[in-house]
Length: 212
Ligand code: PRP
Image (cartoon, rainbow, N blue to C red; front, side):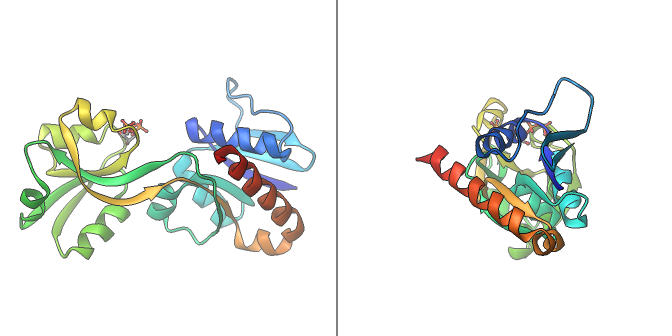
C-alpha cells in the first residue's frame, strides 16, 4: 500500500491530474464529499490534507509520499526527500510593502514589524540581513497588515500579483521562487523503493510532457 498526502485546493487539483495521467491513481478524489481518506487505485490511498500539513504527514510516515509547494516545505523544514520539481503551482516568496515606501526606505529602518503566514522563512531572511524584526504570524489576508499599518511589510507568496496591486502594495525583494514538489518519506523510500521509484519516474515524465 502506498499512501499519498494530497493538498486541498488548486495545487491538489493540478497534482491529481498528474497522478491520473500516470495511472498511479485510477479515479479522482470526490472533493464534494466530506471524506478525507480515499482508495483511488489498487494499493494506493489518498489523505486529503491542508497544503501546509503535507510535510508533517510525509515526515512522520503516515503518508509515504506527498505533493506540496516549496513554500510550505521551506517553512516547515521537514526532513523528507524532495525528489521532483513538478513545475506547476508557481509563485514567489517575497517581501512587500506599501507603494509609498521603497526598498531602501524599508530596509533602512532599524526595526521592522513583519506580518506573515511564513514566520520561519521571514525570520531566516531578515536574520540574514541582520535586521531587527518582530514577526507577527497571521493566517490569511496578510496584505491587510501592511495596508492598515499593523506591520511595516509582509512576507507572503505572490502569484499573479493582483492582491498586491489591488491593495496598493509592491514587491521590494524576491526571497525565492516556489513550485509544487513530489516529496517522499525517508523510510518509505527505503522500504517501498521499487514502487516509489517507479511512480516517481512516471510523474517526472508526465510533468515534463505537460511543460513541453
Ligand atoms: C495567497 C497569498 C496571497 C495571494 C497571492 O493567499 O497569501 O494573499 O494568494 O495571489 P495573487 O498574487 O495571485 O493575488 P490565498 O488566496 O491562498 O488566501 P489567504 O489570503 O486567505 O491566505
